[in-house]
Image (cartoon, rainbow, N blue to C red; front, side):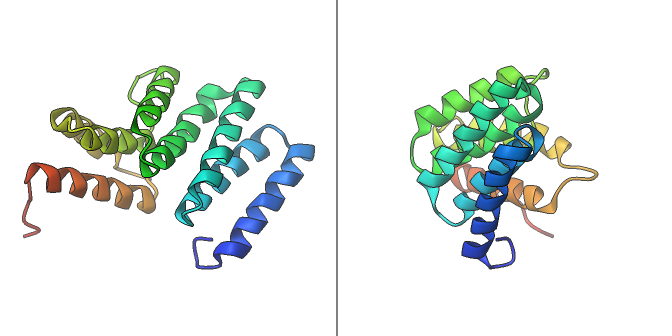
Length: 168
């Protein structure tokens, strides 16, 4: 999916999830559903992505591994809900995810969704505070795609607030 073979990649992820349902209903299925939801969202199949993300949430709940997987599954769900314009639902999902995280901050992915949510709802000071924490989280061995997504959320916040920094 990530290299352009979108339909074939999604079909492969769907097939992997089908196999995992029978043979690895814990780690394999939950990780597969997360990846499938994420890639469906990248392909703008948002309703399908939403359904798969919440299937992953339910699978993590059934397996008793919500603290391990629930935060990022909810982050992808919040991402999708925001893109669908379902802001109150996204906010509820973000709060559920925060309750699962011992720190209350969540993973970097959840922090990014929190920046987007606060920006979308005009709570720019809150978005800025989360942005500062997320910047501290985005160091070391962090997926470059996630850092790029953080920079996109920051740019959106800056566009709304008029805060632009020179690249020089």
